[in-house]
Image (cartoon, rainbow, N blue to C red; front, top):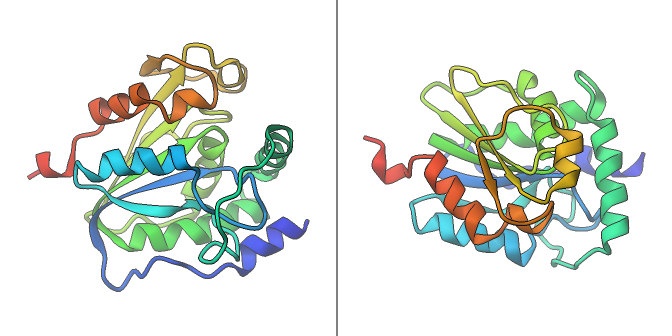
Length: 214
């Protein structure tokens, strides 16, 4: 599959040589094969979290080869759904795609010194679940995972993986595709519930701000 080759060829856009204290990033399925730009709604979530001290990573994980040059272009919902479904099916434990996702995630872990906030939208929960066993969490780093409308098996909490789940009250996709516990229910469906004001408030309630941690 060509989109897997694109992921495999992608360079890292995070420099682990100078780790940032606290970083926030999106991990979701890719709706486009030509760019990894976040949607305006996803960027707005990072803007809100930046006020709290989280340094935003303005690209969606796992990014494509054109991530640093492509511009955001909205993809029709049926096509985006089909691509996300293909990635979901490809995200098998120990599989090729799992290793590729891990290869993109590792520099983000290495490039964050104290706290990393991963916003896992939809199939992002499945991607992280298969990639997590393949990455190394650096000493001193705490990873906060907030799965927003998860589809797939959520990552099990570990010593340095703190996992919380947020779902929209009208999110039928997540209700069918994820059977685990849910921490917060917010207004909205599968798409709007992940980026609305209530979702931002839920993230803030579930994850301590960097400035609140000594």
